[in-house]
Length: 131
Image (cartoon, rainbow, N blue to C red):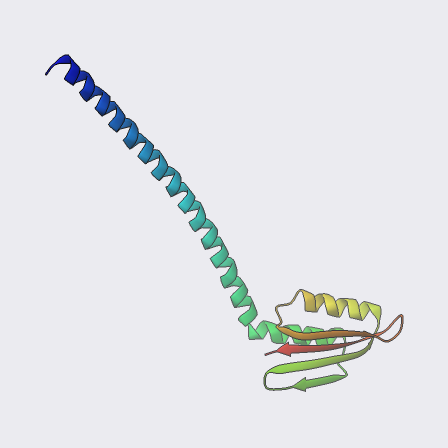
């Protein structure tokens, strides 16, 4: 081989090595990005699973309804096929606050929540919950 061919071979080899190194770096960056995406997907899937489990827990919902009844005795309670209706009348500020806080932090499937102010100190609450 002549010296010209050797230099050409070395140059082509060097360019090939640079190309392979670049491909390797791009593949590594893509792998890291895919791994991060997978981790966020797994985290979201676990959160969704926990929420699904929490909202499907009928026993916890029954306990919560009993807690609501202990805070304030409902003036009317209807049990329909697809929903449960609770009405509370004449709640003072303390009971109203406790009741609404429990409802807000619960996993109940609320269809309708209506709060009607009677006067400065009392209010009525109409709560419809899907079963």
